Amino acid sequence: MNIILIGPPGSGKGTQAKILEERHNMKQLSSGDMLRAAVSEGSEIGNKAKSYMEAGELVPDDLVVEIVTEQIEKLGDKGFILDGFPRNVHQAEVLDRMLEKRDRQIGRVLVIEVSDDLLVDRIAGRYTCAGCGEGYHDKFKQPEKEGVCDKCGSTEFIRRPDDNPDTVRNRLAVYHEQTRPLVDYYKEQGKVRIVDGEQPIEEVTKALEQAMA
Ligand code: AP5
Image (cartoon, rainbow, N blue to C red; front, side, top):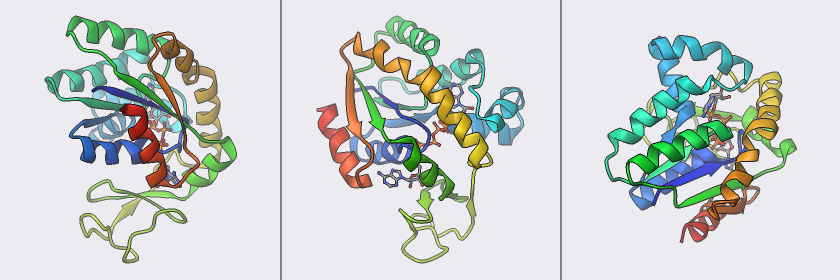
């Protein structure tokens, strides 16, 4: 099955996509991770995307669509979890057309709901392992051994430059204005399931798995 995860910044899309990827032999496709990789490589797309990301604005559709569809095409028949894409109705329409041409489709659109107040707290405490990208949080998910990644043993961690309070507020506003309308778009296709993202991580996973069944 192919899945889309929709949710505001910090709602747990990346966290859950990684868990589902491991458990269900699917591939996580995170548009944010792809764009951050392009920025750090200094590619043409990365250079164009950088200022939008730093401001918490959406990167222009043509850049994102190119980078994501390329990855979908590489997958062959393997099921995928889209995390952060599509982000507006235009991107969803392009995705639908692209999948239709390849005889593929989205099975479920899973919406993770979390209140804005909680999101600011979650994003402010977030960091990832510089070695393998495993996600952690100052309060909610610390490594078992302080300062050492549980997964790869690295002792280096990074925080995202767009995780500062002003940019986070803008990212939330952009979500409500441009991304949330996607829920109605996919409701018309009968694919939407809403999940309470304010529960502990493992409870959210269970709810998502039930919604996928
Ligand atoms: P992107 O990377 O997609 O960021 P985002 O949507 O803002 O989402 P986040 O990655 O911040 O949060 P998340 O929902 O993955 O939460 P996480 O699992 O990390 O996009 C970044 C930028 O790229 C955009 O602003 C835009 O500029 C650009 N972009 C990307 N895609 C685009 C597109 N399609 N079109 C145009 N532009 C695009 O969790 C957050 C923290 O909370 C973690 O520390 C985690 O451990 C913790 N946590 C998770 N779940 C729980 C829980 N249940 N309880 C307690 N803590 C939890």
